Amino acid sequence: MLPTEGRLLAIDVGEIRTGIACSDPSQSVAHPVGTVTRRRGKRFPMRALGTHLEACAPVGIVVGLPLTPQGTEREAAAAARAVGSLIHQKTGLPVDYWDERMSSARVHATKKEVEHSRRTRDMDVDALAATVILQNFLDSRHQ
Image (tube, rainbow, N blue to C red; front, side, top):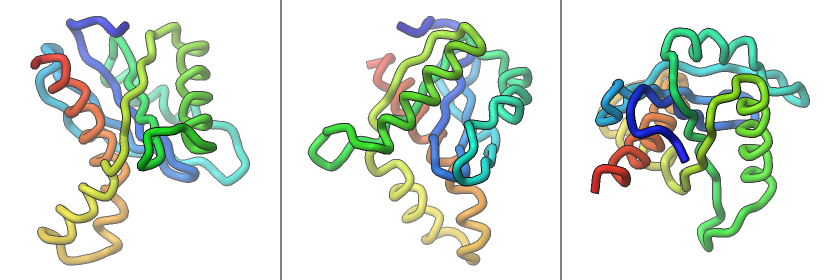
């Protein structure tokens, strides 16, 4: 269980890019922080994440869990859990998982309506997807 006070960091694990978002200390609002990139076949880039961990100083981590439309876990969910476990081992921070179904699709659809360039949209979508995941997590705690 994650603490209810202090900043939370969320990550949307992807094969290449992982989006990152952070909450405010009262855990009311999420905002995008950035992305970390890894090469195919390489381990998760903990050093790159460390910069964001330092800047946000979170009390816990929310990892987006990519479930199938039926709500089951497959390979991508196992990869997200492995990253969450690695982060917990390296930082000692508590980690929780949140159903991320459709978060990236929602961000793509919204940005497509607002922005002009597909390249610009793709650069931001990972961090915004992490923001959607974190905001949904935060909202669920305040209901």
